[in-house]
Image (tube, rainbow, N blue to C red):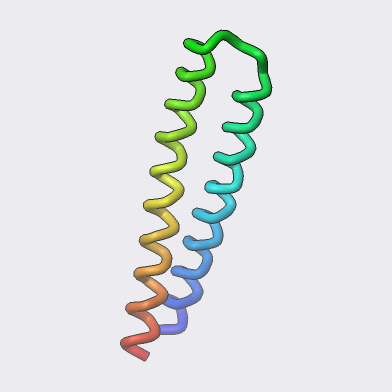
Length: 71
């Protein structure tokens, strides 16, 4: 069960780092000075990445919880 806990913690950390990267990408897009249409296109890509990062983080947290319950 230790492997499940540590693996889940690693997945969670990867998801959190990806969420922080989404924040950086969104701030860069807003500060770029591009027209609104191009900013929206960039932010739509960031939203897709954000949802993926959130899903990875949630799966990691679920793995940690399952590992703790089974331990």
